[in-house]
Length: 256
Image 1 (cartoon, helix red, strand yellow):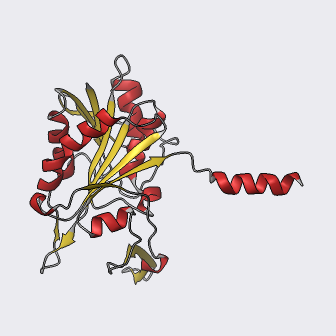
Image 2 (cartoon, one colour):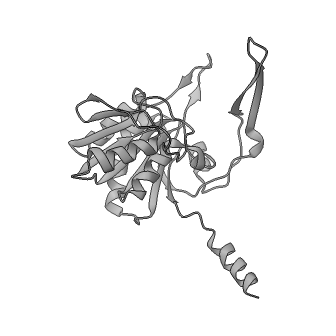
Image 3 (cartoon, one colour):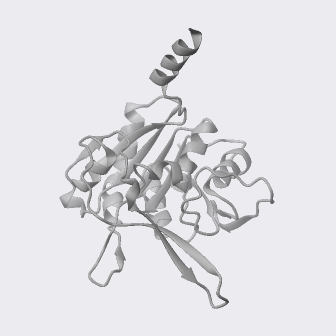
C-alpha cells in the first residue's frame, strides 16, 4: 500500500513525525508532502496566483510553499503521478478539528483534496490542554498507540468514495481512553469567538482572532461530546454540502 501524508502544521511539526510513524506501521511505501510553514486555518484554499515551490527535504519527504490542498495535489498529481497513493493521511494535527473547525481546518482540507483526487482519505487530530504554566501539552503517545490499528480497521470496514473520515483523539493518556465512537459533526457556541484589538508602534490598529476556552455541553453523539468524554471520535464527512430535505422542500415550493 502506498501512503501519502500531508498536514497543515508544516514540515517541521511534531505531529508529522507521529503520522509518519503511524503510516510506517501500515506500509513501507510512505511519502510525505507538507507545507513549508504553518497553514492552520487555511481551509481548502488553493494557490492560483503564484507558483508553487517544491523542496526535497529527504528521501520521500518534500515541502511545498503552499497550502495543504496544494500539497495533496503535488503529491498525487506530480510526485506520485506514475503510481498514485492508495491512501492519504492528513495530520496528526496539534489540536482537535471538530464541529465548526471542519470548515476552517487545513488538516481536513488535505484529506478533502485527497478524496477529490480519487484517493481514500482520513484526517487525524489530537486535542490538547494547558499545564499550570499555561504551556500547551499534547499527549502524542495516544495517536501513536491507537492510530495504525484504527486506520487499518477503518480501511478493512471500508467507506464510500465520497466520504472522508475525520478522526480526533482525546487529551488523555492511552490507558485512559474510553474507546472509539462514530459521531456526527457538532456545533460550537458562536459567542466563543473573540477579537482582541491592539495598537502597533506607529499607532495603527491591528486585531487577533481567537476562541475562548470554556466548558460547553455538547449533544451526546457529537464529535465534541466524544472528545469531552475521553473517547476517540470518528466522523464520516462528505464534501457534498447540499441539504437534501431543504432542497426538496424548496423545489416543491418553487414548482407551485
